[in-house]
Image (cartoon, rainbow, N blue to C red; front, side):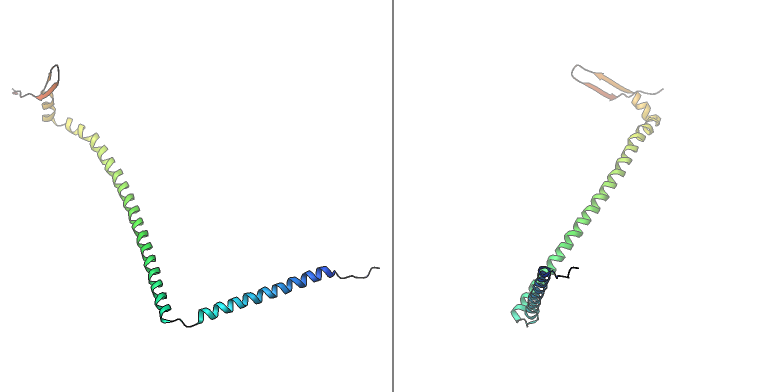
Length: 136
């Protein structure tokens, strides 16, 4: 029977990986600690003024972006409204264009006037005019 022989290279690799993980974790903790100490240190008055000015600039920029967004939305709503209105107006105009000649043709005095048109055709032009005819 064979005796169990440990895999020394595999164990060494695992050990090195564990040591590297510990070293990297310690470095990361040191960096975090340095950042925490840096951020928790007292700010000078000048730094506070700069921070307030920066915050005011950021707020102003955000408000401008919001206003631009509202303007775009209002413009889009206006375009949709104009588009709908133009469709309705086109339909109304089409109905008027169809109904007006029919209504005019049903008005007898107008129909009689159209029949009284005198067409005068000349060599260089044609003239249409209403002729006054006395009705009996």
